[in-house]
Image (cartoon, rainbow, N blue to C red; front, side, top):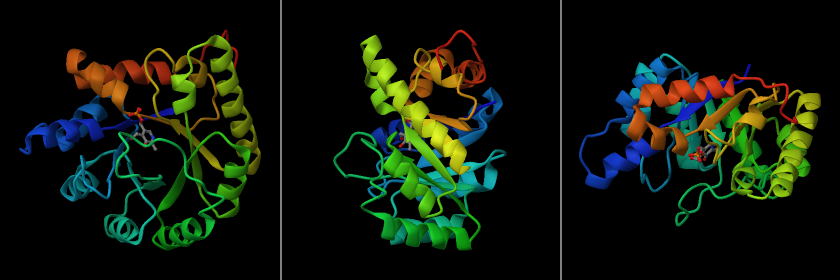
Length: 245
Ligand code: PXP
């Protein structure tokens, strides 16, 4: 059964809007855990626009579930991860001006830097996931440089509107999952997933964990965080045999 990782960056975004102490992502993590989160995900950006170093340190000390630290593959960030020792580091591409992570890593182009950083993290027993588009060449290279997990960027799927387009995006995801299963590399998925588009993916039992942030935090504004997490948890663990995949 797939797990649910809850990304709490947007709680920190709200806090940073006023520069004060609330709302505190550390409190959010407690409620997410109570709602059934299997892990907590935070993206420590180089520009520190939402999550701060203090958040990551406190989460590492207080979480009852694993911490997945998303970050860029830079020397500064790898040093930070080695000092904090999260359960998992997810390496993502980062552009200063983007609103959110816009695409997957180009593992083929950046293989040397990624491999160097994966090796450093492995030396400290930190597992490494690479955030990639649903692309077979990216998957093969991620496997070659010893990534433990790939996280499939589901943004294109989430943005698709027409049924044929949705089907096409799902096919790409299924193809990558099928090869990843053969290669015995772990499979996560995330970006743009919400309460309406999760169903076809929830039926793919090979997906180890979904990482979901924006839709859960948005629903939490009205329903409360524990309830919003709990509703999503029910959806990611629901297998519907009538779904096409
Ligand atoms: N996975 C990764 C690697 C991400 O960068 C993000 C966005 O921070 C997510 C998952 C969650 O995306 P969303 O907020 O759209 O659910």
